[in-house]
Image (cartoon, rainbow, N blue to C red; front, side):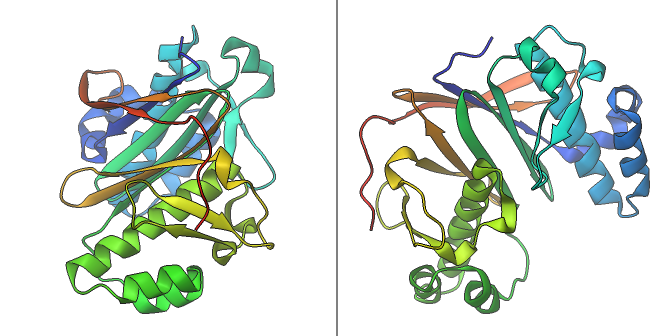
Length: 258
């Protein structure tokens, strides 16, 4: 059982999928198996299989349900959740999954809005073009003010934070990405909203983490609880855990908007 003030972030390496597929593939339902078979790019197949195995085995840590027996449904924006007829087996349990080249991340919490995003940063992106298209003007300006590696770090800080927020809201790209803006110059990210994306900044807390030299992670959490304890661990579905970090994210009081 997960404590209401805890969020666990489970991290898995998709490179393990080839060696583990004998144990992982039977966990998938027919729709998941069909989707897995449709992937033609090996890396994408590995990420998908690792993600599905991670979701199913991890949820079974918090509820007495066999990993293969979980059923899922999606809202009209595509966000998955535990199927309504199984919700009583894991009351108020929420999860969010993200995957990129070399890393899969699953955040699990209770009675909160929760989003996670992880990105592989060792790639040649047209940062200026993407900033102009997806970022608020203040965010784009902050990215452009950096040089070299610092510009890349700033870009992925905003990118992961924005992805984590829209995933926590469960609305995906139905939310305008330039309808909210982050200030990342302080100790913790701060969000502000435009009229095109109304929300209360005081209800949100955000966390950024470096997960090795090539990956950046962001969490978005909205909870009615007080200080939130976060656990990060590297796991192998149907295998072992290796705790990475445990920290407390202050959730008391409001956050100023920039």
